Structures are given as structure tokens and as C-alpha cells.
Amino acid sequence: MKRDCRWYKERLTDIAFDEGTMDDDTKAHLTACLQCSTYFEQLSGVRQNLDKFYLDTHINLLQIQRAFVKADEIKEKAWSSKDGKKSGAGVSLKEVLLFILLALTVLVTPAVILARFNIRYLLYVQIIIYFSMPLVLLPLLKIRRYDI
Amino acid sequence: MAGETELIKRAQRGNRQALERLLKDNYSILRGYLVRLTLDTALADDLTQEVMVRAIININSFKPRAKFSTWLITIGTNLYRDLMRKEKRLVPIMDHMADDKRTAMDDLMRDRIQIEELKEILSKLPYEKRAVVVLKHYYGYKYREIAKILGCPVGTVRSRLYNSINFIRKEMERRQWL
Image 1 (tube, chains in turn yellow, blue):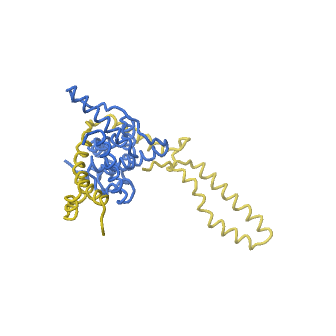
Image 2 (cartoon, chains in turn purple, blue):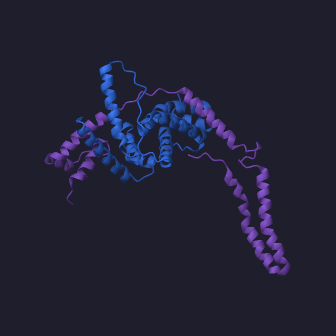
Image 3 (cartoon, one colour):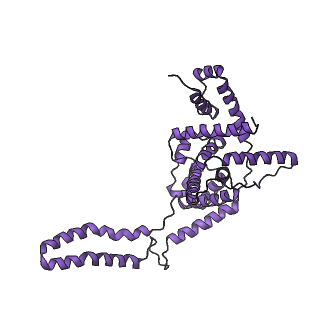
């Protein structure tokens, strides 16, 4: 396969950035191709110039302390619901109970109505209730997360 | 003196001093990376703070397969990516570094001008390409490590590096730096 200069330049970039070693094929191409050999020489200049962007970073201890304080605040908030009750999930017990009550009302009412006409439907609705019950866990999605 | 792995274990058991020590040890790497990535010291400071907050909260989810600094850099990259998407700030705000303490005025001026020009060149790169250059040149990460940090294939990292370096080379050539 005939390789073009672009292929060799990519390879030379790898080598300049310590991702490979010079092989005989690349060496031979460098000897024959002025464009690629100039490119390779320039890469070390590029790296030297990039080094000029030095930084003298001092450790900001105050910033680290502030991070701990902020993290504590977030953790505290995550464990408390809006009304201040500790629910363990950022949702108050009142909200969960209300949701369960509403869910049961919505599901049981049609069952009772249908049961008056035909008992077979009661069985169907009970099946629906059985599979729908996990929906009452939906409020738990309100857990205040602080994911990465 | 405890090693990083030991400090991580202690931090995950709730030892605040160990976590503080980890953050201190990796502060320069994190802030340096964010300054070079954002090209904006104020934004880099805000992001550094936010990364540390997230690291403190999520320390138990850190798996010591990678270095702690790599984890911090990954969080920082994700935060900056989210910010760029949210604010659609494609061109970073250029600012002046406040940390230089050198005394020779001529050298200082010349260096300052070159740094500003270098920042200008880097600012022309999209952040995902700039991240590759920063991680590769300044921190010596391998392609596969960069791919993991940025969440993209190794081939993409390689081509981004080539394209970015070629662009930087042309810009430096135009300014007669090479």
C-alpha cells in the first residue's frame, strides 16, 4: 500500500508526542521527503513554544476549605426535604403517602365500578394494580442527586 | 507518608484529612489543566472549586483504577463541556495571567506577549481539540487515557491531536516562531 505524506505526518506526530518509535519505513520516508522532514523538525519547535504557557499555580487552601463547606451544605440539603423533615430521600413522608393514596384511588375506583357489573373485570383490574404498584415509587425520583 | 491509594481508601472511609490531602496534592494539576483548557483564570477558578465539591461528594464512587488527578480532570472536562453546551461559548474569554512573578521587565513583556499570542492560537481551537493538546502536551497522557477522559475513540484523539498540532504549527510559522 502506498502511503501518502499525510499518513507519515500523523505517524511523526505520534512519535513527537511519545506514542510510538521511529521505524525504518518512516526513517526512509523522512530522508526522501523534504516536506515531512521539515514538518518533523518543526514539531519540536511547536512543543518548545507550547512550553512557554507555563503556570505558577499556588495551592489555594481557602478554596479547598470552601469546597468542603459547599459540599457539606449540598449533602445537608440532599438529606432534608423542603419542609425540613428528614425523609432520607429528599421527599417528605407526607408527599409519598399522598401519592400512594392518589394512585390507589385512581386504580381501585374503576375496579369497584367494574366489579358491580362483572366479577371477571375485577380480576383484570387487580392484575393491572399488581403491575402498577411499583409506580408509587415514582416520587423517589425526586431524590436530589449531585452526580458527576 | 501515605500513598495515593491509601489516602483514597481513608478518604472513602470518611477521613476528611485524607481527602483534603488528596485535593491539595492534585490542586495544581487540576487548576493548571482548567486554566489551559478554558484560557480564562476566573472561569478556571470557578470550575476548580466545583470539581472539588463534586469530588468530595462523590469520593465513594471513585474507583482507584485511574489516578485521582485523572478523575478530577475528567470531572473538570465534563463540567466545562456542559458549560460550553449550555452557554454556547465557542470562543473562550481571553484574560491575563496574574501569577507571573518574574522581575526582568523586558523578558516579562516578551514572554507575556508570546503567552498571550499562544493563548490566542489555542483559543482558535474548539475546546475538544484544545483538551487533547493540553492533556497530551502538558500532562503526557496516552491516547487511550485521553479517550477515556473525553469519552471518545482513540482514533478520534489521534486525529484531533494531528489536526490541532498542524494548525498550531501553521500559526506559529505564520508568526515566524519556527
